[in-house]
Length: 95
Image 1 (tube, rainbow, N blue to C red):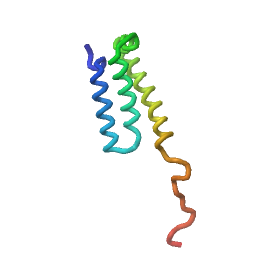
Image 2: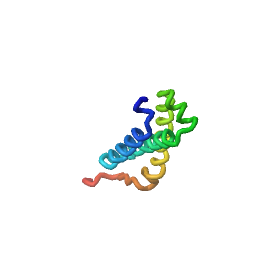
Image 3: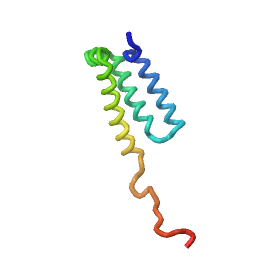
Image 4: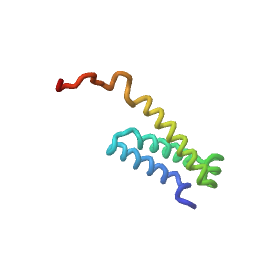
């Protein structure tokens, strides 16, 4: 059995990425943590999807990448820079 087919490896990766997000707050690693958590759930519950994923590493990585991208976009929309939050200056303070 390969390590990438074990659910707890993906869960540990999700937890590690979530902790890394605390150290480097940029909403980048949290999307990857969400992708790893979804893959862990898919492997944990088994079923036909887990059987397809365990037979193919590229399929597993594709699911991880797509879910991570969707999670990152959703987090960026929800927690990113809101309209009017960024302050711009038209004049120099020294003038």
